Structure formats: structure tokens, C-alpha cells
Length: 260
Image (cartoon, rainbow, N blue to C red):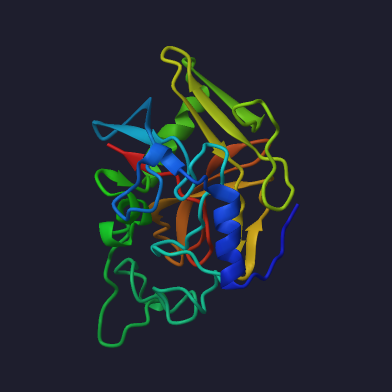
């Protein structure tokens, strides 16, 4: 079910606090910004380029695994009430007027006078919201790391439950701020018991906050879609399937950090 809400910034802030954060989030542990709850690092055994990639136990801006957390446009480090090209930091108001993150050969997407496209196709640490807020080795996953997670679907040592009902510590069914039952995917490594839950957090499109929440999960990677650089790669899933796709960089998606 789609959700179309035009919220004021004050209302969005109130929603963010009431929906996602306890009075004492993250057991008193915070990222380098002193505000964002610091997750645990879940070791599912995903190895990419010789590095053991561990996954955050909850979304960025959340404090529990079933909470949606905050929504960010790709490369931006603050939430907002309008996720559109008009407000996107790295474009001059349109998808084909990019001012940062553009392959060298995509000059038709570039809009900086007397300067060639920068050739950057992966978010820099200063534009990686997970790294900026959590610090240390925390960051957004690359597309290769998302694919390593997706590969667990066919590994016999793992269970990949497609549409799990979220419950709290008392076994009570969880609903989100819009009244949707919270569901998602749960990945569990049989040999170690390590487990990861990803809620179907929806996304933000223009002034529509939490569109498709409860029906779709969309999570940013740090990797640009190089063939069409106004898009970036993401993990996506619903009740039937999980895979990678892309979203417009100006849209607001959830972030599930990783750590090496």
C-alpha cells in the first residue's frame, strides 16, 4: 500500500523520533556524531575482496532491528521533507544536471561549466552517511557487498525467510507509524546462529514519506549506476523476491551499514 504524505519538517522530525528511537537507544552507545545509535556488527560470513564484511544489526537512525530508521538521498547526510531533484545536493535541479558523481563519458548528465565530469562512481567517505554518523570502519555497502549478501539465498548454510512478521521482545506484533504491519526478510547462518532482519521500510519520493512501507524494502549502496548516473544501486525486496536494482539518487532510502 502506498503512502502519500506531505509533512512539515517539524512533523517529520516528530515522526522520526516517535517511530524509531527509544529514550536510551543503542544501550548508551552512539556514533561519532553523539546522536546516532551504534549497532552491533553481525558476522554472516560475507567475504568480498578478501575482507570479512559485517552487517549492522539495525538500520541507520534506528535502535532496533524492526525499526525503519532514517531516509537519505544518495550522497546526502541529512534527512529532509522533500526528496526530489529540486532539493538534491549534487544536481542543479534535474537528473541530467549533476554536479558530483558522474562517469567521465557521461557528459550529457553533467552541469558544471568548464569542468569535465569528476569520474567518481562510489561515494566518498565525506558523503557516506553511515561513515559520517557512525565513524570507525562503518560505511554504506557497495554493490559487490550487496550481491554477496544476496548470494546467501542459495547457500545451504543459510536460511533466507522472505516475508517475516516483526515482533518485539514480548512477541507483540509491530506496526509502523502509518499502521502497516512491519515485515521483512530474515537471514540466518545455521552454523553460527548469526541473524539479520531487514524491514520493508519503503522509500521517500518528493514529499511522500514512507511510500510502500510494509510492502517494499529499498536500501542504498554506495555504488553509482554507471550507465545512468542519475541512479544509484540498491538492495530491493518484497514478499516474493530479493535482488539488486537502482533508484533515482534524489529519492530517500534506508541505509543498512557495514563494517570491515
